[in-house]
Length: 149
Image (tube, rainbow, N blue to C red):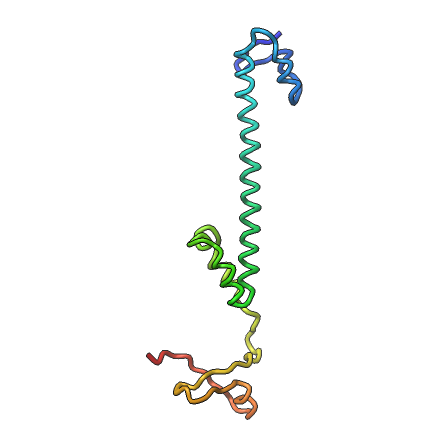
C-alpha cells in the first residue's frame, strides 16, 4: 500500500534504491505518485549533476591556470605565442593573472648573489658594454636605471 505523509509519499513501493524503486511505482492509477516521485528524485539528481558540473569546471579552471603559469615561465616569445591564442581579456578576468605572473617571473636571485651577465647599449648609442667586462677589473659597479626623457 502506498500513502502520502507529511514528508511525502511512503509505503511499499517507495523502499529500495535505483530504478527498481521507480518501476515498483508504475502501477495503474498512480500517475500523480509517479510525477511526485520523479520531482523528488529530480532534486537529488539535479544536485548531483550540478555538483559534478561545478567540480568539472573547477578542475578545468585549475588546469587552465596551470597551463598559463607554465607558459609564463617560458621565454617571452613562447608566452606571447600562447597569449595570442587566448581571446581578449579572458586571461585577465577569469584567472589570477597578476599573481601567476609575479610568481612565474620572480626569478631565483637572492641577496648577495652575483648579478647575471648582460649587455647594455651606451646612452649615446656609440657602443655596448657588458657587465662582466666591468667586474673583471675588480672594481665596484653601480647601475642607475633612471629616465632620460
